[in-house]
Image (cartoon, rainbow, N blue to C red; front, side, top):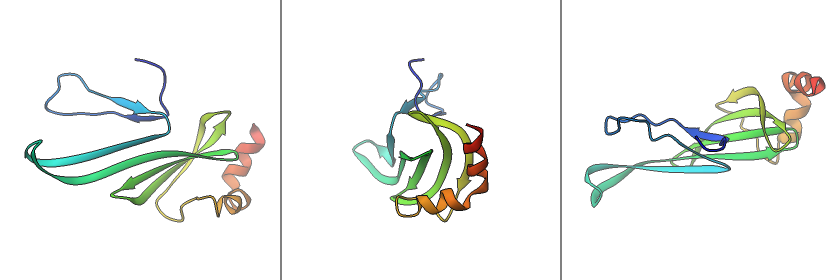
Length: 115
């Protein structure tokens, strides 16, 4: 395996004897098509994962067909994701509310004090 990637896709398929797993650094986009061949297929879904840095946390965003569905929040360890904090399925963190997240999240406050 090459160097570590912060976003990793572990792929399983009946068409491969070995997993064609792969990763990305800041964002990954996968488009899935269904049909009888590459030229006779229709798009089924777009999946996108992106990484955003906000002060002392790293947020991984999971989008399905352009809609934000989940976030994983990790502490920031220099330029990489550190300890996992939580997964969110609503009340998502963004640049306009990240300051409030730091002020109201006790778990993040405790973990940051340990640093």
